[in-house]
Amino acid sequence: MHHLKLGLPSKGRLQDLTIDWFAARGITIERTGSGREYAGRVQGVDNVELVLLSAGEIPRELAAGRIHLGVTGQDLIHEKIPMWQDHIVELQTMGFGFADLILAVPSVWVDVETLDDLDAVAAAFRAKHGFRLRIATKYHNLTREFLRRHDIADYQLVDSQGATEGTVKNLTAEAIADITSSGATLEANHLKILPEGLILKSQATLFGAKNADWDDTAKAALRQMQGLLGIDAGALLDG
Image (cartoon, rainbow, N blue to C red):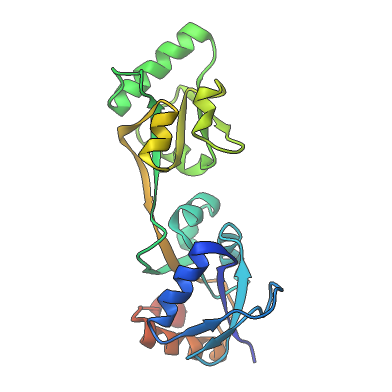
């Protein structure tokens, strides 16, 4: 008999808010011990096992079907899992962990207000400097897809180690694509959000894995959870 494996963020505010969210719906999660596996008890539903993972690991574990359900940001699922809808079902947005992935440019680019303006600047930049305008980000897939949709081609993505907002100041990039920090952080780094530059709105979300082993025990646990959480898990139960 297998348990339904529920993957939760292993630490921090996201874990606390997730536990509160489940508690408000009749599912109590108690953390025990310091190990990763079996590091807690889930009460209110039968046969659910807690697996604590970093928010960044949860998308991969879901896609591989090593956990049945997991809580993480939509931004991480969309960024890390190509064709994510083939492997993962979005069950419920949770109302916290809000993050917007945005495109920001130097505040001194007063004539850059639209993506067309950015396209023109990128072309001029390449002609003048002989290399492509650099956009620093940790979200390569989402940023590339967004720019492709808007027909912007004259750029290169550079990986930001550490704080993305600092890259323009440090002259390692001309623009950034990053999860919104406070406006103050952007201002301090002489950056402004491009008005058309919202790449993705994200929040903490409960996801289900299509490739997990949905045996009778796991399905029974999911049916119980479905009733308590008010979600529609048909895509997983009918599979």
